[in-house]
Image (cartoon, rainbow, N blue to C red; front, side, top):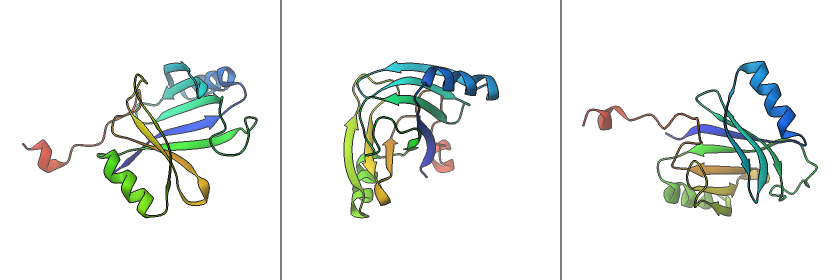
Length: 139
């Protein structure tokens, strides 16, 4: 079963917002990023990655001044299989993101009403992996 493991918030001041969540909820900073898509922080409660980012590209058609929920990420066991399933259901591929990025390869897709989300086979930094099925764990 796929698991929600990543939430990204678009922020004007990622430094201040990250500090707020670290102090308010004791979230741990697991990574700071400044790449071609965004600048900001990845915080974690140990289960979910909370990315607080100032985006450098408009991925959701709301402009670079937009703040708020940007996208979410789902951990899956097979990116290719899930990508094909999403597209068969009407979803649309946006981009592949991988290479030397911490946390592994991701595929970004648009779902219903243009909502952007990521799928990945590798947990985001600081997050839990998919649970091992009982049958596989017994092997």
